[in-house]
Length: 404
Image (cartoon, rainbow, N blue to C red; front, side):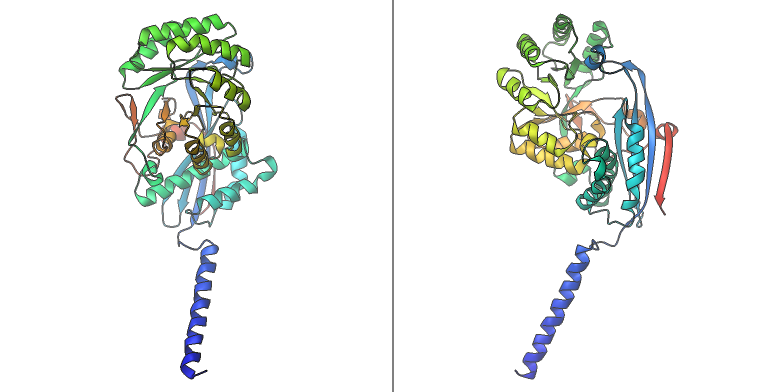
């Protein structure tokens, strides 16, 4: 071996060592220099204007809803970047979400905020003894959403654009004016106002013990709005299989866009049978709390419209996996609630989605979403495009800060 050959060999070895050190650093999560410096979590209670009821209340399974508990996460990096995320709970569970968030929040300090999938897995496994679905991942959702908000802000893009949007607006429908706690006169008035407001559809609640009342309610609303906007109904899981078939057939004359939650949320086989039996599309999925549960629903072909809820399934990271499953199965999507977040996710979904218009959350944020021609417009603001209002701070019941 000549000296020059030896020198070349040594140079190659040194280069290999340098590369190994470089890739080892990447494996340790050191691809960027920024790190999470602090995490602030807050619990807040959003009061509703009045108690509202759906079929679960009329069948005695739940009490009227009077407020919504929120968990907010504000993540700040050493470079001064900030992301805001949130989760929520109705009737029960809000205190539990905050308590779980307190336990796992310290795991975020020092992490590279871009490593969102790895951080999600780390946080879920930190609390794995209480499960990897339900309340445990709903607490993690607030952190995950904040990290995605931060990532989109760093890129200077709305979240929809960061994910790869298919559209700049999404068809939207209103739900907040169709509860069973409202008289039929009020529901009709709300539906007509919706039709005049630039929203593309209205959903009303059904599932009453007396099914004849449901038929009258739907017929009255359909007569009032005609074909100006779409009409959906939601039974909130209160029918058995035979009632669902009977009601579904009775509703076919009204040309509904979908029948939502006709059966128990976990009855994937029943929903699949119903989807094959009826001409009207079936929508369900809002009560499922993991990717695995949605995968089972999709595997059975239990819905024409899947309705995942990002805070309920653990954040944007698992929601994107559900989207991929839904797209592969050529299903449509109508995410549940939280339009401020789901607008971005729906805009990035391939198959012609809907987003649910609820104005309940507006007092929590400084910004407002716009509707036009039956569609909700994706905002141009970076990230999710919302910031916490003074009112959200005033409704805060507990706060804790971790890190600097």
